[in-house]
Length: 165
Image (cartoon, rainbow, N blue to C red; front, side):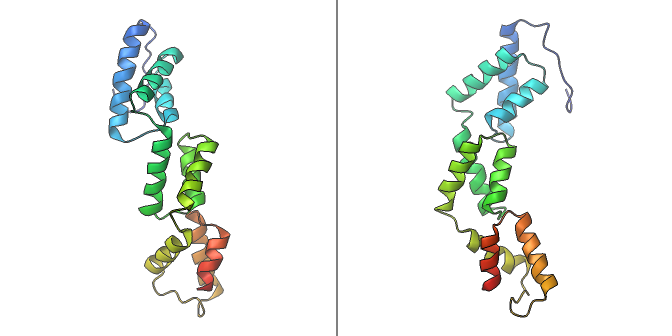
């Protein structure tokens, strides 16, 4: 099997489908952590029936292979620490991964207590714009920095604080 080929499992009984779906889902999770929605969508893409998909996702949750709150926190921390993204971009990425808006909001709120968006923005500015001098910067240079930080998900408040330093 290669690529995104859809395999139809309609000719199998539900027990055989369940066995194959569990095996596929475990191999899929071995690549990297995923959300429940990502696993469900992949199983739908592979042609498994809805009752089998529901059973597989329940099995994976029960055995601890799927844990959306833990996944949300670990992905958010990775994006904040390694990718140096702002909270808005982290939230958007979590929503793209199929996590509920409530879980995303709770995760971001929890992380805002431990991480300073302003500190991260300053680190990026010093690394990416090492010769940037705020008082002597032209409006064009300031705009470049503002747009760069906005694309990375930093708030206007954070950006304005960084430009005042």
